[in-house]
Image (cartoon, one colour):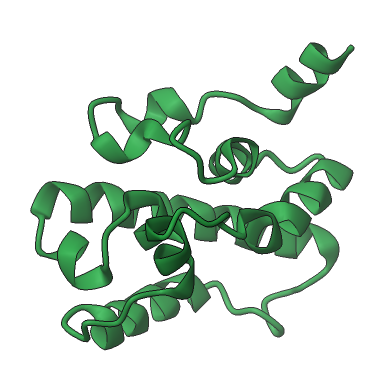
Length: 143
């Protein structure tokens, strides 16, 4: 997902220290949100250990950093095709809403659907400013 939102391959963004730092921060925030939703739905430590995000991030970086791999979603975006963000985050956001778990980063990306509205990738805005919205903000807007 991060590669597609950045419009860069893993090798391209990992070679840029600013992009890499912000991207990894965003990925970590999304993974932490996924863990919170998982716990809320009933996946305990035995099913998904707390170390899972660290393990996935380390392994992914190891495998992808210099691989030349390009995700299919990134290829779609580069070809002007839709990005399947709903498939990636839709259920997470719905379950978070059902269990009142705040997932501001996931919600932000689910709402912008991977369009240019996802302008965080230019790094001119601190991530903390982009992800201020919560489900209670969204609920107030829909009333």
